[in-house]
Image (cartoon, rainbow, N blue to C red; front, side, top):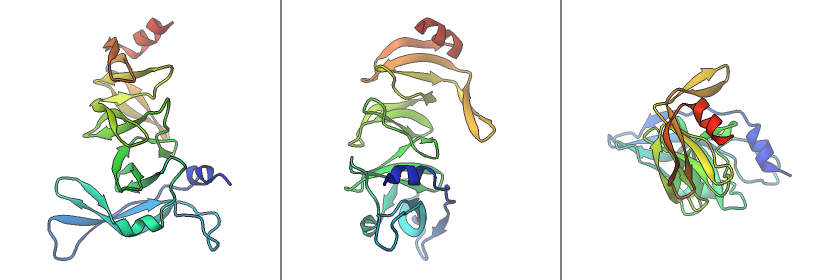
Length: 195
């Protein structure tokens, strides 16, 4: 059974924040994830859970460790959790890193790296959830043949139920974050350089 297919077809839940009673420095939050497969639930789907973690005033998210006995982790030891307005990869050590929402799920790992987002900037993480290219771009495409297209000054524009990236200056980086093609071209110009 391919749980990733079941997961990918699950409907995204809505996430709510509720204040901890008597606590002004943290908020309790709901989250959604795919629970482990059980005899009673042989085909688990994305499920919302109340009070699964907290967020403090600085925006730092922590997940209650008792939730981990319910989380389904993939063969890489990762799970994804939807919290408030984002999607995060989490490992069995409760390390949590925000990723890009793509195709109704977390960004795929391409060539060993996945996009991460911090302060509305894109960077890249590896499967150990280590940031290998710090978030510094307004958008990035995944790596293909050792390079990723990145832009600054671009923005996401809705097109139906999807989004497209428009404007800005584009270039290429390698998997170490080195600039391979200077970030100064339009998207169309960058495409013509690659031919």
